[in-house]
Length: 311
Image 1 (cartoon, rainbow, N blue to C red):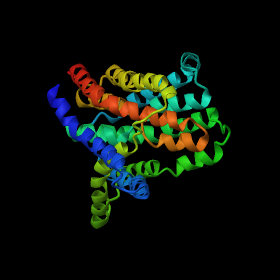
Image 2: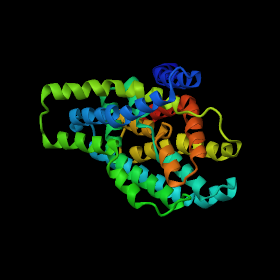
Image 3: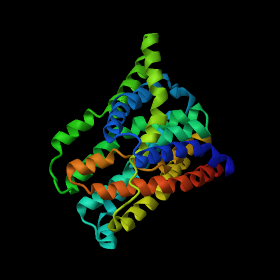
Image 4: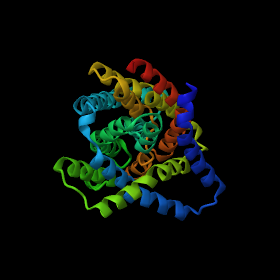
């Protein structure tokens, strides 16, 4: 347990560094925005292109891993539909607020997932997480946008937003990486090296930005719904993915990777969707913050449990 905790500690130290820098106001807000944009449009897509282009999918049971991710996503999407009325009754929230709850356990922070896989496992674990990004990026973005567009206070504004999904840099990076991999094209070496250099900075910068995006003061009304969403995301979702992997015969690092993909906190970009489409943006910020803090304690438990199940 201590070894797992220590291997995860650098990830959360970078998140804490981001939170500390933001609260200390050593960096101007406009500068944070610039770093966020270059990370979103350049660094992280470069990581996806580099990883997926260089991945040898023959080294992992890719078809079963893809199926496990798909089964897990279907289960989680079904729960998002089924839990709408119970959440409204239990916590007294409206549809725009529930759209933020749904985003809170549909989305996952791939920055954190890749960083953890890099620290606790072999390149095969990193490959499985990257495969998860390739499988989940498009359907999760479409599902999340559709939920907020349907339930948000500006419901019906789906057309332009769905076009934005198709222009999402992460979706584009995933598509380019997979296309290069499966086509067998060899990139010009200096160009490939430039992409690799950009990819190297994506994880540390991404983790610092996760910390900078945390809202350490949250509205009181958001506490109960955020806490319930936290339990769903950090306990139920990894169980769903790990169960799907186990049922399909995945063991070892592949099963652990599926559990890690489910165990990471939700992604910060859902805040922009909530804000722009009439969801409950303050509630979503509270959900991200609570999950990120709680994940410091829950992810080691998930990794330990998955390691035991993986044999």
